[in-house]
Amino acid sequence: MIEAVRYAGFWRRLLAFFIDYLLLSALLAPLLFLAYGRGYFLWLAQTDGLFEIYGLADLLLSKLLPFVLLVLFWRRLGATPGKILLDCRVVDAQTLDALSLKSAIIRAGGYILSALPAYLGFFWIAVDKRKQGLHDKLAGTLVLHDPDDYANLSLQELMDRCA
Image (cartoon, rainbow, N blue to C red; front, side, top):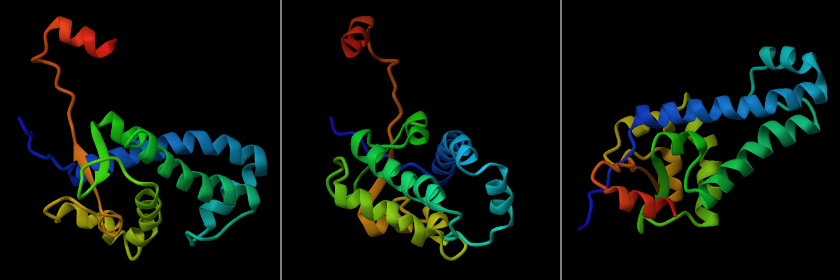
């Protein structure tokens, strides 16, 4: 039996983004504090530009590391932690298979274009029939909502899945 494709909608994806942002911030804030002290956060509050860099540790931790983590999560797990918690996965739009390295890199880079101007590339998710943002269209990806519904499984089937 072939199941219908369910696209992850705007609000689900936005919540997943906030979960990922909180997790990443909890990881990076202590590291950046250790590297620069509180002066970094005062500078950050006054900074207008997305592309401004405080120093090498800032470049590596707040710019490069998130990019690398996105690509790794999409390639290895099919989703970021926020998307996993909300039963979503990122797939190739043509095959519905896992992303290639090239697609993952294009999608991560596409986040920058989706943010310009005024995050319109992300808001496009709300109106697109396949719920694709600009970054999804550039990389040829979809975000699917795959809820884990174990209600119809027997106890033996559940135990077999865990083994």
